[in-house]
Length: 106
Image 1 (cartoon, rainbow, N blue to C red):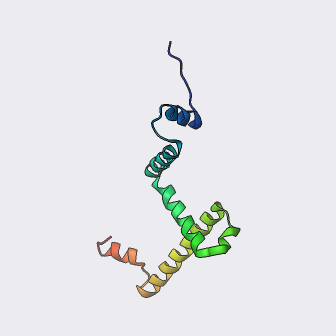
Image 2: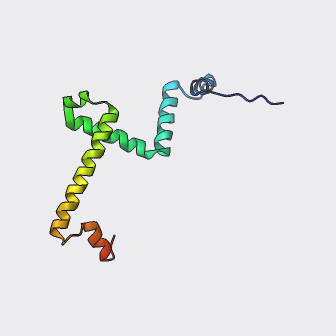
Image 3: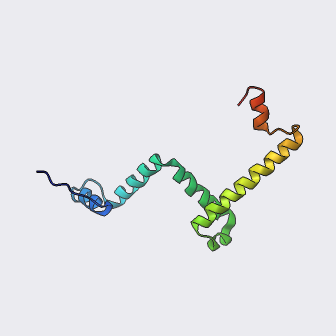
């Protein structure tokens, strides 16, 4: 009967490393790259957080990553709703998206 072996992430990395396939640093890069390919939204989220930290400068130190994510979502919502209101005031109650959809576009 074949034994079932369970590997934790650390055991798996050590097992691969013991074969001499890749150095640990390279394995970590490969794992991160693979996860980024599988979950591209994570990379976008990380980029948004980095950009927010750059924009906020030293003020960003007062927020953790989750607080920044929440702040980004709220600002995006506000800007989209303000833009929709502005478009409705110009285009007879329609947003550009609604207008294009009505005309058979986007």
